[in-house]
Image (cartoon, rainbow, N blue to C red; front, top):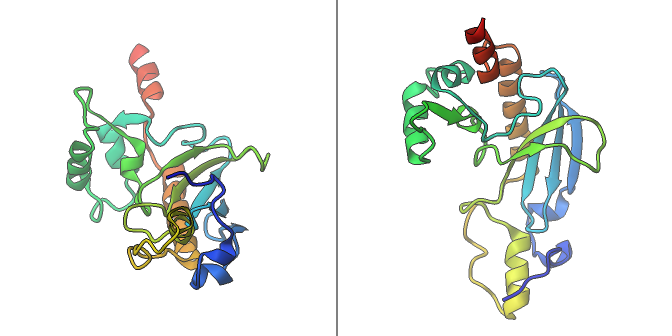
Length: 202
């Protein structure tokens, strides 16, 4: 079964909140001052992003860059909620806690489906380094994907009732949460590995 990369027109996705939503939204988060961005993919799901300016601790860093476990604990904004123990268990589950005692940065950030994007947006040319997430996971309803599958097989897939559609309001709230966490990291005391190495050479 082959599906076109652009999917099928939105009008063919069927009724749902997506029909009344915009497909792209840009705003500046009042609390943090970060630029936030929402984009819709051909699957119908929304992706959320927060743009970081040069000088931020995570500017240019990838979400799977590994940091020391102690530094990871410092990154977590609410240690009572997230905590070192849940982080350690999560790291083990993803086989991310190696012999070097380091974990990926994304394990320290709580957002829908975890951080899945760190890069520039070439079409924006704003110089911001975006940290983003998507709503295209196993328990997310993706109306465009369902419509594309049904268009390809020629009949109902029976999957339209599966999963939860993440509305633009939901994604906005997740962007705000991500922005707050990134702001706390900007104002925090995490020691990057390169800084630690430089200190050790002195």
